Image 1 (cartoon, chains in turn blue, brown):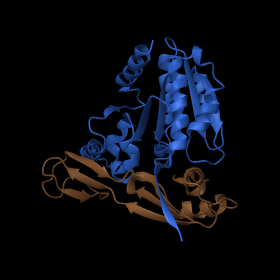
Image 2 (tube, each protein chain N blue to C red; image 1 turned 90 degrees about the horizontal axis):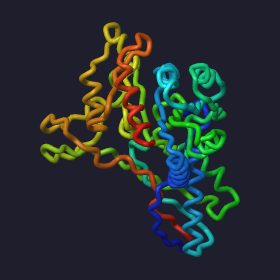
Image 3 (cartoon, rainbow over the protein chains, first blue to last red; image 1 turned 90 degrees about the vertical axis):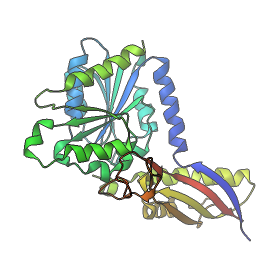
Length: 219
Length: 120
């Protein structure tokens, strides 16, 4: 004879607890951290590279790179002027709080103002795993198409800022910006959005200022 | 681009699920778990077949071995803030089907939790 025991516990709670500890470590040493998520090819690494180049003169930067097998992205971040740590996820489709914790432990947080975490290129799984970073940023890109908020609502809903990369390709690609933005607005009202082109180096200043302000606030 | 080619995040999720179930079974002082009742929202990016697949592996040699998983899918519902119509999410258009408003809020669909366990 079986009976029922009431539980109601979030299945991500174990990950979320570690994420909270990560946040505490970062807060204690006043490190501002962002989790960058996107599909493969949206321009995560290019944007990180540009961001590091622009900010490295004034701030101390570190990049933690989640990649399925290679260290190419970490090398690019390092060449641009950041301390870089590579996490090879060994086939895992996302970073989780435990992976981030072990990467953070390899850094001297007291010597860092900004930590950028480059998540694995994927619009599904990373949305479910909190890392403990302060802000989650999604990089969308024009060639992906204007329907992505409708197809991946979980990802668009959970982020604190949206970068729309490759806007220089708008004249060449069928992309209805209004339709795209309508979907985003419903999932995530008032989401701060930065249309940019990494290739033409346009639109970067508002993005960089958004980061600068958050770093300075923590000093 | 999703997890199909690589290890799935459902493995990590299934391990958490087992841990939570065992913790509550121990608290309730029961020896065997025969069923888990899980709620998955449409927006939660979890594939229940994969959870089932990993469950059979991770639950081996635990008091939850052989327990059946019951999934309740929670559809994503939107509520229109202008006319209060509640409607289901579709993947083409989020606007209110009644009045066309874009001022809508996601009402349900993000859940992912263990609701209860059946024990002996």
